[in-house]
Image (cartoon, rainbow, N blue to C red; front, side):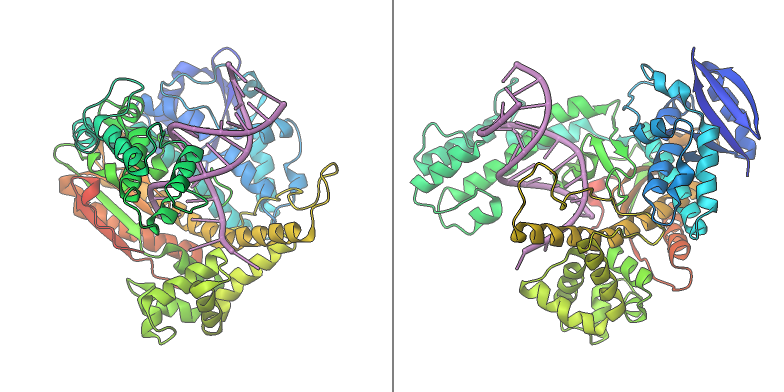
Length: 546
DNA sequence: TAGAAAAGCGCC
DNA sequence: AGGGCGCTTTTCTA
């Protein structure tokens, strides 16, 4: 496949290298050049998709595939199966220091990044390809790097398209729960009334309920013996002030996190445009550093409303991580339980466990490292029944406790956690209890890393394949006039689609999930059943429990 | 006084 | 003695 390397040159110019031959071109001419090359769909190789993609999308140009050098370098430099010496060379340290491109709301790029003018995409690409080729796990790493890069394209496209957002619906919801929008710095009426109730019922006239120390002192003066003010703690307390306090907390959170200020900042032209960071977390999951895309509460999802004549196709995977664990451990008994829509129920029907709740407790406990309580007991019990699956996470935990690196199925390595438990030179020697706690904590991290990270790889393959399928489904036109991804949340996608294509989109989403399963677990077929809804508002999507 | 840390909550 | 992340406010610290 043709690889075309794009590098930044001084003076708003771009160096284009293909097959060893280079030419340069004005930055302003890049969209037309890229559009002209898309017939043969080369792989565009660049430092950072978040830097090159937005101006192309703004010009109506969508690329089929790319290789994101920054993401791939970080992947390869942490991958245990890679000879890291092969990544050394000219400007290697610059590449290592390359952070994610700054968020760009307008397609103005490259400003103030002189260092970028030294980076040669073709040189770095050659190193990365050599490192992959030399690895005993070359095939898996190729898939991983391609999926990571495709994910970066999907992220840029989702930010470009945005989630259709009804400010009217959102504001009506806020007014109903909080009262009219208050002047800057003031609490909305219903929130203020709630605070008054708390003050009255605690007999604390001057109390600021946002202040934990003040609140804790007031609670204790009222005879409530608590050591923290968490909702879960307060719920166990029988006192008339608890209900309004919890209600205050909930309303205050809505007001400050997803209130009018959030709308002002994040919704423009009827679109909510969150900023994603592919592989933003150590496990390879995405994070989001703008708009709180990955944590906006169920409460406000009713404001996500499809355009007239369009719908949302919402799909999420049932029990992604337990299924991934079955696949990567090759545990056929657990894989059999995973045949069907409900893995936990499958375990009950196989006679492995008495109730669905027990199955869930045991599996989640194994993946998170529960050692006590009901969850801990179920882990011990189920380990006998599913020794391969439970053994895999157990071994990952032991590796972490011993300071070893673990890897996902496709080869992403856990971060070195440099010196986090080795005492630093000037720190006082920690006592054995502290060291032991720390060791176990690392073990819980590596235990979860292998499953969460492989789950993230499955999800990347899923959206990468889905992205291509959606493109083929559409008619001519830019991304946002065809069915397109608008939202991705670990194991859930939202596609914005013309109503007439809803059924076709739903089946593509399902087929993409099957493709992802085959890519990761060829030899062992694992089912990845989806809950799919076709809705006008995101809030209407059915979300059966996991 | 700016920035980090902590607490609490939201999502998976 | 249960993994990952971001966001907001308050509180602490350099």
